[in-house]
Image (cartoon, rainbow, N blue to C red; front, side):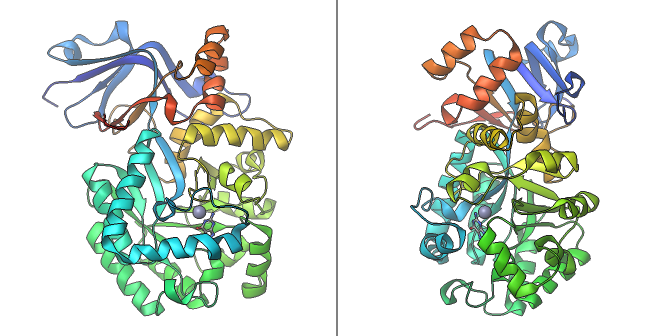
Length: 440
Ligand code: GUN
Ligand code: ZN
């Protein structure tokens, strides 16, 4: 296309495929002195070594210099709650009492449109400050929570998935935070789909909270809607906590928790299941076959004492997997911090997570998990130029560790283990820098 090209210079790292374990260098491109060329439409035109920028791109180009810093595709958070900004770091409970004690009262405040709007804005600014440019987001049962979220996302031109939380089952959905009927819930959902789905970069994800807050009729409605509309996403929670799994067994029976969702048609190629800590090999095979994805949420699984996700098993079974912060069960908006905790979870299981596999999961892996990899996830030409610029020297600890590192892999691992929002020097959305630090 015509118009000026924007050339952004720095160290470029992006993935073309899953590097696997041990990581296969064919899966990524690393340009130590690289350039990302972005067209006027905010899409990648070219990525490669600085000395090989084609002349046709140089002519009349604008330049941004991030030399010495690392440029990676914007992070993808496959599971997070816009409604739990005020719940993060709430003391002392595991999942089910934590929901009742802290989460549901906080979500009730989203009946107020002004609260929904300002909180959604604050939430998105935390994501951007952490280098996250795409997420799959649970708001609340209130339609206005979806309107507020999507409006704020559209203002920032972000690629985002969201959908009204569906929860209608007594007593697990409390009376003050409950769909009045399946018909009402379906009507509200369809209105929101008409209003937001496919508008700019926004996509609608049908969002039954999880099995315990769902009646069988609600799950059946969701399954029908997904069958009717293959263009919609599905997001929910799966087998996060042992008490939850036992409750689902009691309420629904079935061979497994995955089997319950499967019975109602929720296990699709556009489904994202958060957690999946307590699942077995048959479940993984089923998820892999359906093309469903798991969201690995280590800071949440550790904070709520939910358990140790088996990342190795998910990858061995080729279940699409991405990283999720799960704020407010999770304790950080940072995907870097989330990867660092993810590494520790693998270590507790006697495995490991290479920095290359970690950065894959945080970018292209997350995009694939959400079925958004034709739009985002790496720097192949035509992709939307969402990216984040990371500072190897963000803290004295990181700077010193980076200084003594002998290989790029070692530096990248130090960044994965020690990095957080402080390491994010800049975030770009469709080629435009967004303000990420207070005041600037
Ligand atoms: N399961 C059902 N609802 C929730 C929630 O809000 N957070 C987490 N972590 N798990 C859930
Ligand atoms: Zn969650």
